[in-house]
Amino acid sequence: MSNNSKESKFVPYVSASKSLPELTVTAIILGIILAIVFGAANAYLGLLIGLTVSASIPAAVISMAILRGVFRRDSILENNIVQTMTTAGEAIGAGAVFTIPALFMWDMDVSQAFIIFVVLTGGFLGVFMMVPLRQLLIVREHETLPYPEGTACAEVLKSGEKGGTSAKLIGAGLIIGGVVKGLGDGFKLFKTEVETGITNFKNAVVGLDAFPSLLGVGYIIGPRVAGQMLGGGLLAWVVLIPAISFFGSSNGTAIFPSEVPIGELDAWGIWDNYIRYIGAGAVATGGLITLIKTLPILFSSVIDTLKGVKANKGQLKAGSIRTEKDIPAKYVWLGIIIVIIIIAFAPITDVGIIGAVAIAIFGFLFVTVASRVVGIVGSSSSPVSGMTIATLLIVAIVYKATGFTGTQGMVAALTVAAIICTALAVSGDVSQDLKTGYIVGGTPWKQQVAMMIGVVASASVIGFILVLMDNAYTMGSAELPAPKAALMKILAEGVLGGDLPWTLIFIGAAIAITLEFFGLNSLVVAVGIYLPVHTSAPIMIGGFIRFFIEFFSKTKEALKARVDRGVLFASGLIAGESLIGVLIAILIAAGVQVPAAAKLASNLLPFLLFLALAGLLWYVSSKGKKEDAS
Image 1 (cartoon, rainbow, N blue to C red):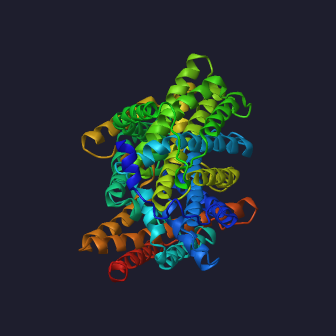
Image 2 (spheres, one colour):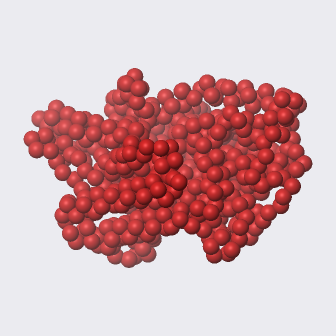
């Protein structure tokens, strides 16, 4: 009785008795376009730095600007459908780039059909498995699970009158980010990488990639996370690389895995042959540590879910009013069963019954965890990496025990991990979307259908984007490290494939454990170790700007106004650069000749340009003090 009384007290922004345009043709078309756009942008970002950012608030702002400004439509529920579909693209992009690029690194001919199959099945499972949890997590625990991104997006939708100014900020960032990327990496008017050695410090290198997207990422994630990532980069490039160079310079023979003596390697050679394995060990261990930290939530989530089902006599029936209607349970369970059966017997993946059973078990277990964790700490802190790593390792061990090894076994294990990773990414985002819908008064089944449409739209193009990026930049290269996928590749090889430099991997694992004792986020620092310091440095500059914005904001109102403006502009920078990066890849694939080298070789110009961009981000953020805080 107490639960029902609590639920009845909550009144959504749009009451259940009121009917507004929602799952309309206009909303679906706009949602599909934005899902593809933000899916491509997040795919580029995930391949570049191994991180993705939430698209819900930028999508909500853009949706309001288009629906109200162009089509003169004023339905908050229609806006909600558009942002729901857009986050599907973001989630599909994340699930795909954290795993599938490993196949490209094995020089395999990856078909579009295979990629579409993996992300579609994972995406559908993510939606289907979350539907039965909505009543438990979104409705019954509305007061205890805040779902920060979902709540924030609901506030943006409710304060829709600010959509015009907010859309201009995103648009300005998008144009500026795109122009800088186009001039730098498209027309090659100037270098986009700044690098310098340190005098009398052999092979110690510091650098900076003058990418607008990295500046925007740093501002969004904040100074603490950005600082720890840079700390990992400095540990690798001014400690480990010089140390390896110093102790190995007199050795005339090559040390595995390098085929060249250390004395003949420069900083990049040492990074490629040694540091990446240390970083991979650190990232894997950091991911597992993150998962272990969530074990209490994992167990409590499962127990609470079982208690909720028991309390409802095995059924989680939605109410009869509009705001309580989910996709009917019989269709949800039928959908899950059909997808699992297809995965088990589809020749396109060849994961077999073992893989399908693993997907069913880990899917239900980890989707429950992911949906609850994002409700507490947000999507950016969800241990998706750790759960994907655990899935890959367990499935690979089972495959090996059954004699399913070699290349086939590695591909099958990675496929299972890719489907689970996509399901987790989608379930986390759909949880946030359903929270938004619960607050604003959306119709749950319409949101769930919209999410599936977004999954289909994004899945249809994500493979095309991955192939383009590989052809243009090469997966696993310094230009496109694809750090999470490279880690999955190494783990699969370690269990099922060839020989690995286990000492280097264990060194990385030991570093991650040590970092935890220092009270740091080992996974964040480990990503910094794995990536070139050139990637972490511009992220830290964005983090510094966020720090000073927070430091000089004397009231909570001014702080919120400034940070919100900065996040919108930063989101535009990320989207603008990412989309132009994909466009450049398309042009290269079409045979357009892109200049091989920058016309201006100066390090100073890109550095000054990046500082100017940082100054602009500061100006845009600080301008919110009076305009938006009052």
